[in-house]
Image (cartoon, rainbow, N blue to C red; front, side, top):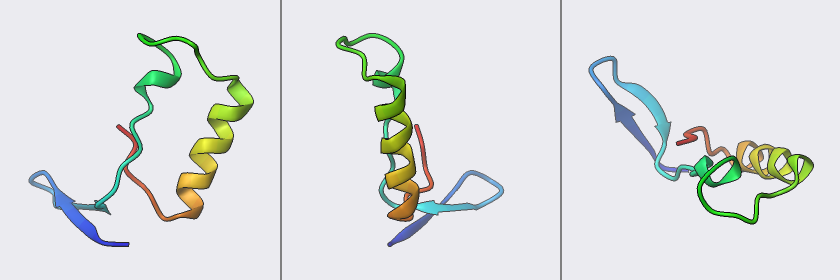
Length: 52
């Protein structure tokens, strides 16, 4: 996984992030809590560590 550095502290994060805002607001239908958690766990398994 490619990485990038963020901010003045140069936090190292994956170049690909997972946008999670839709899990809880704005655009229904909302996913089941279990499905949302499974999505986040799968992202972590794929070394995605930036959750926006």
